[in-house]
Image (cartoon, rainbow, N blue to C red; front, side):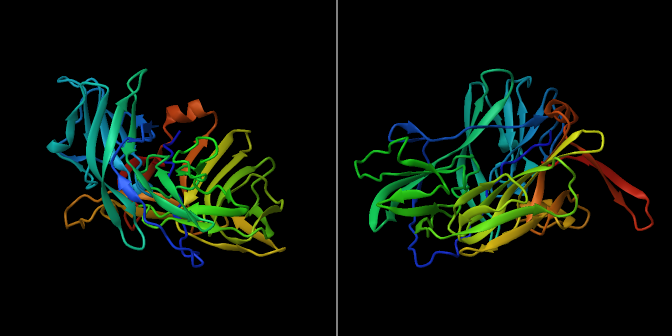
Length: 400
């Protein structure tokens, strides 16, 4: 199975409708008022580099290669090499500055269970890139030679709901170093003003409607938690119908996550049927498509948002979204992952990106049973051809 980077949906903050934004303060700590807030994720490793590695690193027996999926897109992830059987003891290499190279000062011994490393991560690419300093936490798995990671820190401050200010905390729920992932990052709000955060009634996934004094509000944030809003939501509804372009065949199934302009998460898992949703502007943040080929072999495709593309839902009206109508293969160079520009004679790494409807990119594809797909590593061959069709170079890639 190809690596699936559960990457975040960038929130459309243009629909503020006069709602003031609150700036929450980032704290580089793993706990808040005695509660652990760092969310650990397993790193997917393979026996060969996910990206070409240059610099001071030299391959060693037993080395495992992966990506730390921080930032908004796959190209902002940081390369990591885990060497649990290194001759001088377990060691970890991390491309902490994101320049695509591993230098001697990016090698870290890991004799114990835990390790923390300061790193520079990209939290925003558009309209202008933003990079911040964060502390990455690494922890050995209790079984086997696996490794998990977290991004240390949370954001705290106050938010106004229904005209009243409440203490609030934002938690990075998917360990991408950002605070804007709808459905995964979490917001704590002291709604009753007792100075506590009840885990059942005052902690919510970002994008979940919150009822306060009879008013429904939706909270959304930017990646740095520097512009957080609690916007009132209208009770008016319209209908949204999702279809697949072309002929997907009988038995095709789709699960779709959409996000409104207020930041509300809506899940739809039925095709060609109208679903009642609050009025607003919607965009697709994630799409999972399952279908079978002529031999009955199951294929599963996962798409994530590449660029925002809005669809309006009006009161009492129905809006249809036809998905996967246009597919285009694009490429991303390693120079787009860093501030450096390639010079004549330098090696440039090119990564393929399959884009659908100009707004979604293919993040994972599995064929058959998951175990079989994982053993095949979901790789594909890429050929670099000359104008006359001769093969100049070839390489192997996945959807990482």
